[in-house]
Length: 220
Image (tube, rainbow, N blue to C red):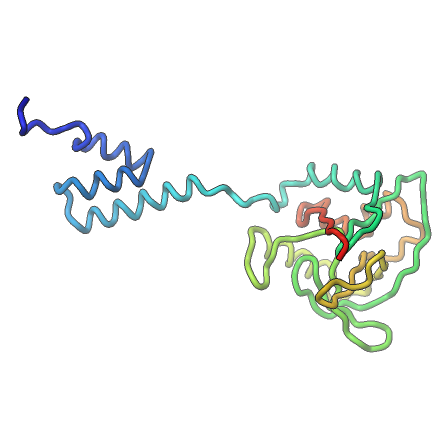
């Protein structure tokens, strides 16, 4: 056998195939092959390693506004049941149209939006409280930035800033951070049924429009 014969794994076509299909092995062969300059090897290693990592890391796109149909089903499930001992926060109950209930609401004014599911309000006694919407969870946009977190925050800001809203207390009063846990109504619905929930309950609107996911937590 001719020792000068180039083995298949030293050939350029095999090295490029490995770079595309399996970056670590391809990078090893690239560095073993001396026909490329040091600069070229560094650049090629960086580019193909980035492509490889991008391909194997799963996408975190679950909170996009394209989840409307899935969230519609989640909203419908609210009318079926509510956890017996909900914790912090809890899912709002949706009532079928043939069932209604009256509720006690507190009128407040929105002074600041923290993120998509948290805001500050001014109470009738002049004090300011931070409110966490119960039963929903939007992507983070404050301490860390998650996909569509800014869009959810912007939607809440455009919908609620400076407006008078109505808070409905659920089972739990506050979470472990001291925030009020509330259902938010854009206007007093009078009696509550599925139609009023879909059009006036802001918690449900966030889910229906794809800016939030329904979320329940175990009791604290």
